[in-house]
Image (cartoon, rainbow, N blue to C red; front, side, top):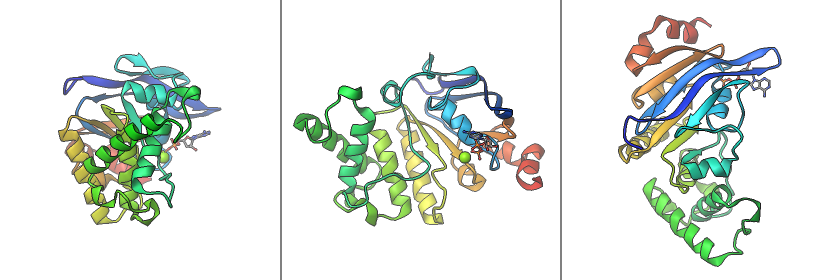
Length: 253
Ligand code: ADP
Ligand code: MG
């Protein structure tokens, strides 16, 4: 996709859990090459929205289109092959295996060809291809010097970056990150921010769901703010930060 083109679009997305409306008529777009933050206080409906956008969950009404095609009803591998890749809120790695093995296995599990897809290490040519791709993505995210370290020995910030390397193996044009900065120290947040800027400069679109306003403000191109399941503000970080409704949502609660 060309920079500025809409690649992901939520149209009137509503998600109800019984009587609770977790997402209420949400509209948003992500454009090629931009970083968009979806922020809001706890319970606002961000994770629910993330699940609609990534195709993990299906809206009660409305739809999500990625590159013009509905995401609902597709499995995660199919969505990865279309060019959308996500990380998980909690790092899920194999602590006694190396960084290289973790990224290669993650890529194997995500990118496979469904249930007929060979088990890890049964297909030597596929294994070699995955290891090569994993090494390339580990270098890309700046973890090259840790390639053969045990994943469990990495600091939390590096583990999050390892998760991003995994997500990059399917060659996405859109990355969805759920609270990537949660629990990180300031230096780690800075390193993560630098990586996301680098990926954007390479043409990647990134959607970040984040509770922490400070992390996103110096980084993202646009912000969508949610409260009580609804969009309450949208715009440039500076505008949104000064919006009375946003200040009220964060401080008034
Ligand atoms: P956020 O990520 O912004 O903190 P969530 O999307 O996790 O918010 O939650 C929004 C609301 O939806 C909350 O009230 C939460 O309890 C509710 N909710 C989320 N997922 C479910 C579910 N699977 N079943 C019932 N209620 C849910
Ligand atoms: Mg959440």
